[in-house]
Image (tube, rainbow over all chains, first blue to last red; front, side, top):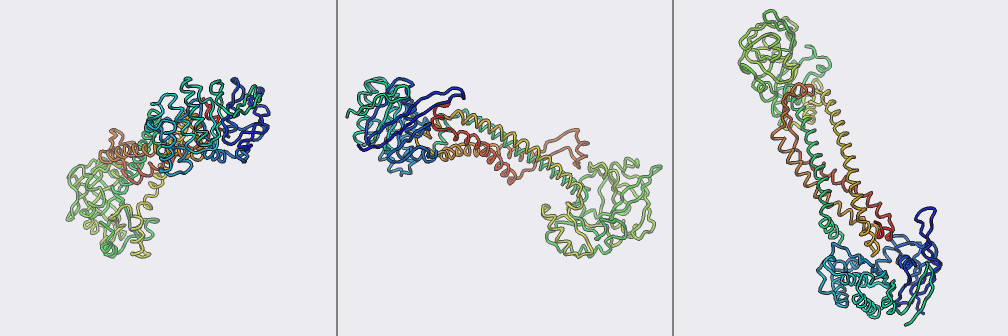
Length: 230
Length: 406
């Protein structure tokens, strides 16, 4: 197995105040293959989002290690983590989280510009990705002029355009109707195959979960199932 | 890219940007105007003090200022005159001879200063001519005609055409006395000066006081009054060690000290205003930045470094601050310019003003572009600095904390 992401003994405890402790993740151990299409599922509060945040370096684990493509992420500084997120990880959020003052094209180009790519490179890549996602006619629009499904496609395009090795998508279809959700999942599946990017998404929608080749089920902060189907 | 994002954010958050613009512009305008006001009052004080009578530069015998007696007169006035005539930096100059005498009219006797002046040159050197209240100013061929201060005339109960006797010492310590005819009455507005001073033509004075080719001092008007200090030093070097050439800074040390003290308190007041402004902008920015924590969290999540967030937010505050200080600077500058041409008149405050050496109820502001630029720069730096703390605060959040911040 060509392991791309290793999660070793990850634990996370929140302490809203000194007397109360909430254990969100308990001793999580996972190996994810390069180019995998992985779903994290489980009931609300099972720790899906927390695990995605720790993998993406958005949050610190209380215990354990995250190794991404051979690089230990645990203990890196915020600047180093920013660099890893910029160059290697794409995020798709449940609430889309596009930059409201930038057009679709500018949103998609944002991370590429952070990477220092030329305008010409950005233009070419932007067109390529938006054509794949069928949003190339929306490039000049602002996020508030788009539907939810269109905004989520733009969010996916932003994540993909920067050619990351890993895309983390937290409940990407939660705010979409079932038809749009399925269409988005089909697109993500295609991107996974065509671009070879590893995608990990969280969901509790059975239709969406069914599309994954690697399914991980969490409950009460623990992995209760880790199955590969593809 | 950050520039574009900063600009779009400013436009998108119109209400927030407008409040910041308004606050900073008004504060800049107030700062520019208060500086112009403070400088204007100082310039008015200097102009009043210097131009009414004492002059920008005074030349005396080297010990006269420490010991103002007839033993320390200028005994060769023509030598000084020749030297001054050859100096291109001098706009005008004149000799004076000041003497203290006893005036007597009817049953009144009052001590005061009787000075011999050169009336034609003096027109350009002091405000004696423009302070004429009644009668006429002196001429170059006058004899015993007297030009007297309004308050002194009042104390002696004199009017134009009246006769007054004086008695005093001649330059050779001889007894000197004569009858003088009041030709004109002047009022500078400086009470003490108007209550103790009277003038005659120096040609007449020299004869009656045995003071030919002698003077207590010369006064000099530089072509560039702002360079009085340098010119005084150059004149001193030219005249040699027997004479002293002092600018108004030295001859009116008490006034200079008072102005410095006034400036000191003025700057303390401005400093307090700055501190208040600093914290007002900082608190406002803190609220504005905290309302955007979620957005900043998203930017951080997709790979923007804390340094880049700082750059973007500082760019935003710099752009707003720049526009604000330009608007405020223009507004304050226009006010400063307007009131430098049409001074603010404080009717009925002449008496209070006299305590500060101001002989007028008008107070023009000083319109100085460089000072306006300085104030604009200070406000710009202050505005940008005051946004740094909120930005540092926001950058301390982990991306996920920022995204979930409510």
